[in-house]
Image 1 (tube, helix red, strand yellow):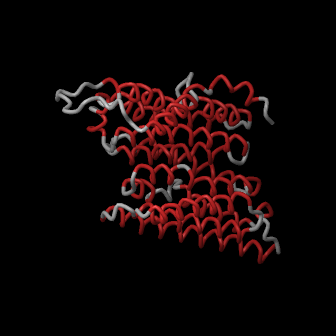
Image 2: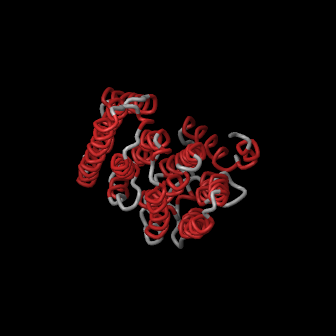
Image 3: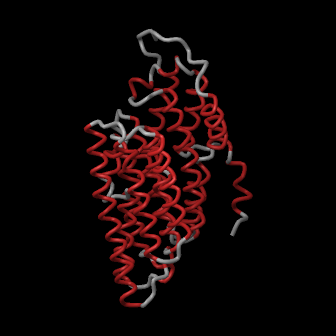
Length: 346
């Protein structure tokens, strides 16, 4: 890809995200989302492979529909209340339409069908952007309108996402599809708590970005796209695979790793709100995700394939990426001791 085109796309991504997260007006938020969508399209279609082109078309159609719904929701709310301010979303139909639009943007069940397919057709770094940066503006809009949203609808979407994200990830062999269903499951955890504790949703999202970025960058370094290639990647970079296992277990939410922190706080907050059944359901559904994370960890470090590797160990990998992965891995596994400090934040 032309370096100038790549630079323009990257700057447009940053611009679109910044416009959306800093705006109070619905039209500006919509403009930022549109800039984001148009900026990521060249990055998805970059390989010129039929699957990449298919992923680009699917992504464009879904995002255009979601943006149109979001604009329609804001316009109908402005028509009735005379308010274009994002925090003044009060009309019930507008709230319902907005929830559907954001669910499509985030890939929440039942609007999740596009996400695994688009991720599978994208390069790993683009898939990382789709799983993290592209989710930030919709999460911000949910954060700003959290007081107006329908709790029952969000709870149904969240539990469905956690269930289907765990269930569908069980029989996958493609790494990107597994991580897509992992993302859907995590979005369910964020959606269920957004009304009761919006700050906790943001904390969960930040930690999710940390862990997902670590996993994607590790797979990009070892050039791993399938479970079968994952089995022999330990011969290339043994230490990196050992830390990958810890990051995957952190993503699964096992104590004493970082990933346990958001799940613990969410279950605690749901229990405080008197939603014990919901909290128990979410905890049980996280076991489905734990199964495929354990399978990934098992493939990456414990399984010894019967064939011999025909390449030397990669001692000389990209030093900048190595430093970044080392920093991200440390954060993705060792942040749990900060939880008492986080609990004191109102």
